[in-house]
Amino acid sequence: MEKVLLKDIVIPKGTIFRGAPTKTERVGDDHFDCVVGLSKNTSGVFGYCVDSDFPGELNNYFTDVK
Image 1 (spheres, rainbow, N blue to C red):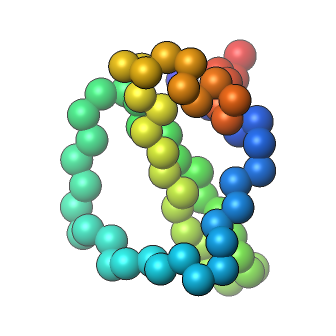
Image 2 (tube, rainbow, N blue to C red):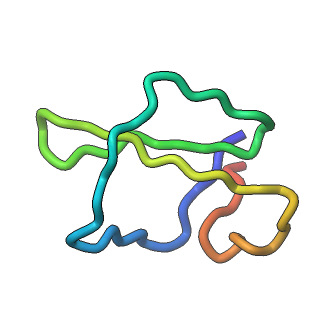
């Protein structure tokens, strides 16, 4: 399954990024991510849990890709 973003997401200047874990385990099918590039030589990953236990809470931000 894929999700499409319906709104811009702005990460404010001053947001602190901390070291990421070397290994991550996710339970369930509610986790989605995408790769973003800030320059032609760099990339990063934005991930989000679109938790099905809270239907409707993120409907303004994500919808299923058909």
